[in-house]
Amino acid sequence: MDQVIRFRSAVALAGRFPVLAGIDVDVALGDVVLVRGANGAGKTSLLRACAGLLRVVAGEATVLGCDLVADQRAVRRRVGLLGHQTGLYEEMTPAENLRFALRAARRPPAAAGPALEILGITGRLATTPVGSLSAGQGRRVAIASLVSRDPELWLLDEPHAGLDPDHRDVLDRLIEGAAARGRTVVMASHETERVAPLARRTVTLSGGAVDASAEGARGGTVAVAATDAVVTGVA
Amino acid sequence: MWRDAALVGGKDLRVEWHSRVAAMQVAPYAVVVLLLFGFAFDQDHALLTQAAPGLFWVAVLLSSLLAVQRSYAIESSDGARDGLRLTGLDPAGIFLGKAAAVAAQLLLLEVLLGFGVVVLFGTRLHDPALLVVSALAATVGLAAAGTVYGMVASGLRVRETLLPMLILPVVAPVLLGATQCWMAALGSARTDGWKWLSLLAAFGAIYTALGVVSFSTLVEET
Image 1 (tube, rainbow over the protein chains, first blue to last red):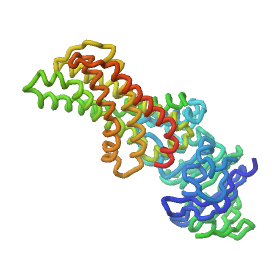
Image 2: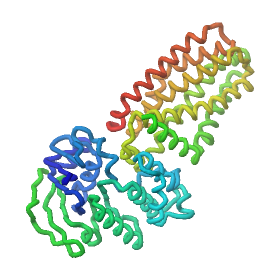
Image 3: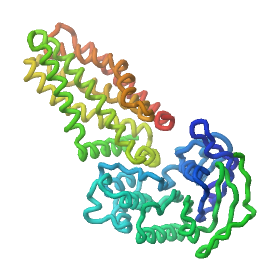
Image 4: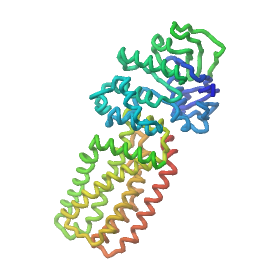
């Protein structure tokens, strides 16, 4: 499978409002894509739709070969979504949360320890209920949960939010490592200076559709330019 | 499905073990309800003894509302519900796991309240097998129906007040059947409790099947 994400005129609704308004997006296997846009442009909605959490009601939407229009649940075990919220159970410890997520994903629970160690959730932190951790520590636990599962598609929504400088660097290395292993990464972020060097491609959303697309050189400054992937959306 | 149910049920019980909400809030609430009933009927001990089965099951019913609300409250913290959806677990397994966790807590509560009924209301045991079997069947019905309607209410802002309105009318058969069974088991009424057991069993089976079949839709649509 060369194409991980393929959306054609995809429409997704939040109530009666089209949060994705006829979007066309292609993401190839192993690609690292930065999705940017103003507040309300549809970045989070795009990631949630790719994760199967937001129903696509019209158009075509295929992720990892799964038709999201027909069955939005089929793709969930194969993707990892780092959203605005941690998705963790506050009464359980980080280790318990990760073991639950790993067992649910049919992965070895032993992967929890190394992932928590990478994100610095060790010692007392690992045995403290998540609800008692700071926001940044909770964010690191959520990242560890995704890292431990190592899904085929990483969907990261404002991934650096709440992280201190050291752990921002750790996250950058994790993203680069995932890409090196052939994982596909789609990141939505306002911190373009931080994220753009990690991305091979940049997609800009506006009004629930792609506004322009630009190729970003890895390790360099992103130059926003029109490419052959320019598409128009219906607001 | 069964493995997913065990995983979710274990998770819910682990959360409860850490938070102690059932032990520190639900159980005391049920005991207070029972005590209040005792005070209300204190002048007529014979009536109290006769009404004990009904009062017991009203206390369990009211407590089950708290248990069900708690079962879904843990999923509303910090996007945990989306996290659960993303696990890809079988929705039927999620239903069975959550219902089993609610049932386990209710059973422990019933043991506690059962002692209370014997001690406070002076009841005597005539048919322990009927008592236990009917309690199990009623608990399955309460947990299954509560879990179904709890999911319906969980996505709404008015879930705290909507849930009792949804559940209480529906579980009236459980209250009726369980009370009749326990009246027979405690010898306070000359009724064939085992016949009422079939009502409890049917209710539990129907709502368990309903939950297994419908939970996928409920999870996505609510």
